[in-house]
Image 1 (tube, one colour):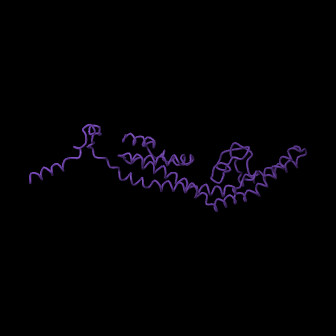
Image 2 (cartoon, one colour; image 1 turned 60 degrees about the vertical axis):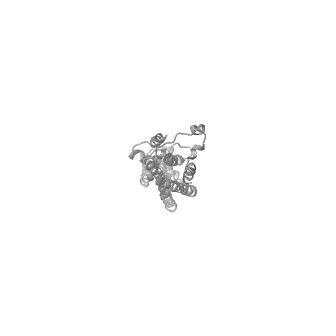
Image 3 (cartoon, one colour; image 1 turned 45 degrees about the vertical axis):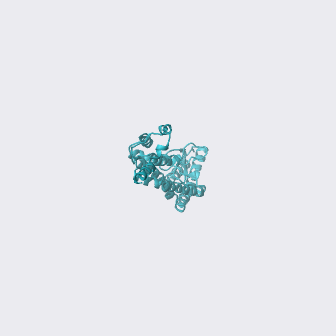
Amino acid sequence: MTGQLTRRALLSAAPAAALVPAAALAALPPIDATPAAEENAELLALGEQLPSIEAAYTSARHAWFAAWAEWNPQWPLAPECCLHFWSMYSSRIERDLSGKGLVRPGSTEPRSIKTQQELEWEVAWSTAQLERDARRKRSWGKRFVQAETEKLARAKLGLQLLPGYLAERERIKRVSNFDAIDNARQEAARNVISFARKVLQEPSRTIEGVRIKARAAALIGAMDGYDQVTGTLGDGITQNGNLAALLGEAVLAVV
């Protein structure tokens, strides 16, 4: 009896593979005895932060466009009498709400805003010219007098309007809080770039790690072109290693 039980036990314990036809077994892929690689825990943790980094940039971008839509239409243009006739680049060019040079219709470059001192000098100059002409036995002519009179009136009007223009510009800057909103957008863009670099610099051992790196790189591609440029300026100066190259190296490591 004991011998029969032993034979039965042996039969029941036979491998299930013994019931599979030999041809089917031959078609199965070879067993890889190499243990599956475990992904870098630091990289996985960074992957969990991806949505919050993207949300922060999206929120800052939306806040910027909302403020721009509300306040840019209220941004004042400098009075014509407060501008130089020619276009010139300097620290005193006319700028829009975001600080970019403002190009008026019909112009190709921003125009420079006159200072109070420049306007006062123009008033003094034209006044002196007209007084000198009045003392001459023979005038320099009607055209000269008319031109200097117009320049004098223009400079005086500029002196009257310049303070109000500057004050209104500063008021809108203050109540809109636009500088802070603009800085927040730029900071969010820089954070996307620096975060992507941090992700790409972490070692990846599996395809899941490569996916995390690809998603981080894709965040850069989803940004506005302006933000991509401004966000990468500092990174390109202070960091070594092209971001695209880092992603390429990660892909090659697992394929």
